[in-house]
Image (tube, rainbow over all chains, first blue to last red; front, side, top):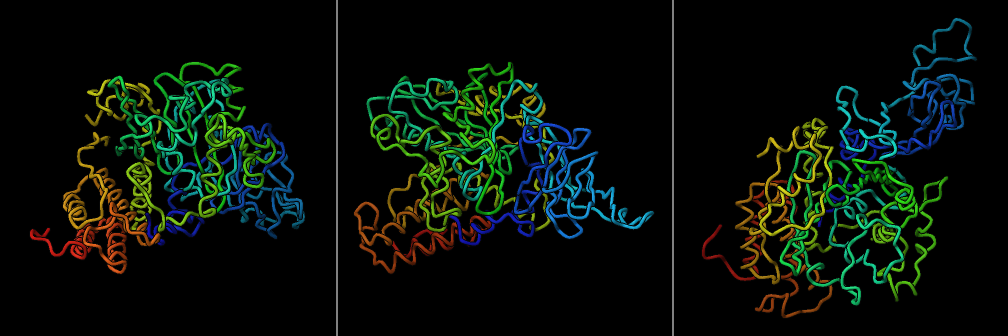
Length: 439
Length: 117
């Protein structure tokens, strides 16, 4: 549980809040690159950490993200014209470049230098891995961009998607770290309806005759290890063969996770960014480090059967959502699906969005040992935010190479150390530059 | 690079709400040094809180979850608050206060300790 004050501390992310300040120390995903497909194309409205923003791709292809309101009379720049290396407010024609500089004020007197003193609030952006990233913190503290593996790969090696979620970011983040739910919520009682989903991103099917997973899968041993990037939540099942099955979920500070995957398999990265305190935007990226995704794999990602949500392509609102009871099919639930809801992400949404409401009352919850990963993640974030309140900056921002981590899901003899198993699953560059120094 | 091997042997299984169990958690808490150890202790306090809170909120006395002495609901209410506060103090890295609060909770259930922390 958390005290009410610590829950408030963790869940409030506006500009004046401590957690909002912590998030603003990191590069965060703001939007998909495909939402701004061409130079001088239409701008898009986005909202992050409670701030209303406008994003546009200028004539040179660079993406700018500005505060949405024009500094003049606060009209929304989203209605503006994106033309000739700047966005022009349609109210009085003031025009701003991606850096926020005012480059034109056509109604001001000729030869006026007034525009030279006017700036729109602009944030630094970086485009990588199919996403446009934003840094919203103090300029003098801007960190190096984190070295996420797929952001260094060719475009055909990964696929990125986006969805909105009707809850505080923390409810999703807790779900991403919580391995215990996989064998229940995502349990498939039927046979092959998800045959398009690669086995690497589906939870394993066992004991298909029974409603609940067998005890050796359901009852896991939970642990965690602190790392340079945050922590690794570990779940260990003991197979009847006498081997251990490990699922290792990295939590990369402040709001990123990696879904457990086998060695040399697809990896999937997730991010959940607060839109405000009761609404979030989730990004999911699936990649293969050694080869392009083929057509079937791309179809899998976009089918909504796995961890990428099926969304309205214009609004990014999941097609199955709270307003339509997540399209729950009680017949399906009775026969072949634990939930009766389509897709892994689709199953996550109701249990994350419909807790006490958009912000869970964590002082009333009842955690158990299966929640150690969640407890660890909260403790780490609380430590960082309280340190920041005392003027101590988060150390993770200065460790960009550690963010190249991969997740691990592997079966191994009991005597093999989980640390060795984790290290064995990492890219060579990650190991040589970071982890190897610790042994 | 920090990557410490997990030490699962240090985790305590919490199945009963007794002074003995609470003191066992406090004894480990006072020795905790690593991030992982603090998380284990925190999860154990979560489990202790759960046993007290469920018993109170459901007003149902279960042989398995309540102290054998048949503590009153009022006592359990105090114990629950002390565990909650100890958990909170642990979040703030005030281990000394957390252990004192746990000892008070244990004393309410089992009487004073013979070997104080």
